Image 1 (cartoon, rainbow over the protein chains, first blue to last red):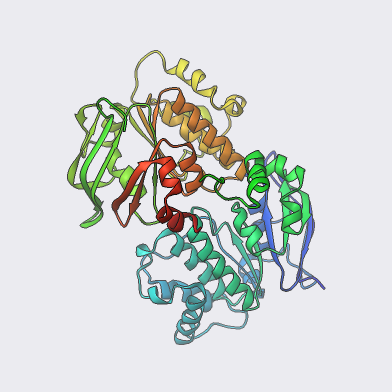
Image 2: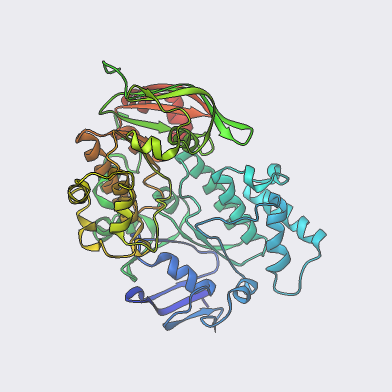
Length: 258
Length: 239
């Protein structure tokens, strides 16, 4: 049984067909990467799964039950947590208080007491590497730390499936390595993950499967090494420079004389 | 370093928010026609520096000279009029306005008769935008929006274009395309100060680079040297 099954989902915004019949499944323990050109429908897909957008056609099953018409807060409480590309923490609260929000309002059965929620927040902050900054006002956080906080808030709901929308955008290579370590810790704690990323180091570094979206449809799906060498993916998404880097260095890194 | 008088001369600049300084004693110089990369970790102060040059961030100390006149703490619109134009991080387009309106807003300060001609000329850098001029900017893909943001900057007829993280959130192939355009704009004579997280890419297309750490310039030099520098490689490439 798949944890999550997306079946032939379509979504239209005005004249634009954002999703045109996408199907895939996520099994427990998967770390699925979703890549594809800007405008291919990646975020719309996450929005459909988390209930922010309602598919026009097709269905989304969570543990075999349809969730395509379920409200977002209920989906969150059923065990699907997510982050957003544009982080919006509560500016007047500390890192710990922001994180505790997930624990306070995102749990399946009733609310936690504030003290318990704070304790949960501390555990999660440890996992994402923000423990030492838990008393910071969020405005003091740098961009990579704000992304960590976004992950922490989602994790505080104790999701079984975590959807990450470009949490590595705007990070340099060293910061990406640190963020990758965080994703691995989250995965090792037993959370199934679906992530959207344009950073190929992430896709190669942690994903066991990759789905490539193009014009709202699946272009290719498979293991990262296979997918990233697929001529169709190079043509539509990666471009020649990436392909050349692959050939000369075995990975997307500076050229040999650099 | 190139000969002749510099286009931009930043000296001992300190700047920040409220009472909190973010930049300390920053010295930076850039010559006409150069493409200079400004690199550094998140939080190092790169965007703050661009903001300080643009008049968006408070300058505490030091001076900024551009085209041989002081623009220190000048109002943003006056900075633009002097030929120093800022393409902000995250594009910052007016989403409900058309692509054409967004581009024309870059010429807001201009009252000459060549604005329309410039629009046509600028579209040659971005052929993909040609048939999308009447689309709402928000409906464009991320790469197209970045092109509009750069195009809007060019409509101000800059001598120096400051571009903040043009690759943010873009697909690899589109990043290459945007960088080719930045390079082409530079080769046509516009100086560029480029802030970019993709350090490999930035130092590949730049002539020179500056490294900013905790609000201070800690390294400067030809891009090729920085690319080889072990400290840069360790700090920003993780190799």
